[in-house]
Length: 67
Image (cartoon, rainbow, N blue to C red; front, side):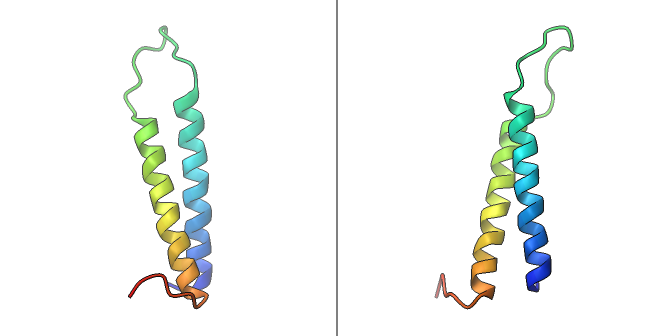
């Protein structure tokens, strides 16, 4: 992947992490019933995706992060 696609992935991952964090932090509304979407788990997945994309971005800039 080139730099533009990686930056887009970082932005998408950060936006999804923020969205799922906001949705998971809303107070419970008993009138609407139980939440069927695991927002906090999805937030962790989004943060992990963002971290991997950031490491790839740093590698594209020339910094060696592994073997």
